[in-house]
Image (cartoon, rainbow, N blue to C red; front, side, top):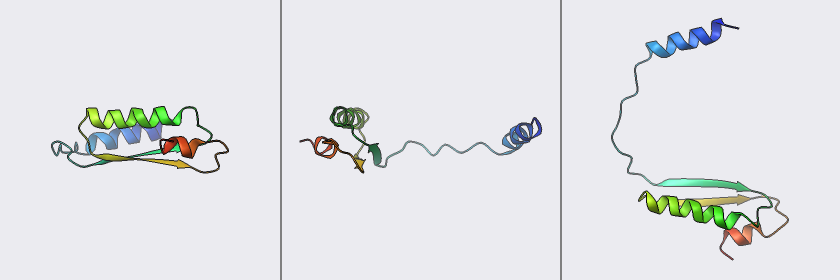
Length: 79
């Protein structure tokens, strides 16, 4: 039980550190999985949209609602 973590620690020290490539200039996709979240999904989408704006990121917010029995999909669309 002790050998495997020690082996991983040793291998991690041998591996070179990842190079920093500078700043990220791409867009971001946020995927939200929701089920029966009618009361909360609109606020969550708004939070992620605000976060993208605050950080100056282009992006998209994708809400996946499979099998919701309430108005989750309608609320996610803004209605």
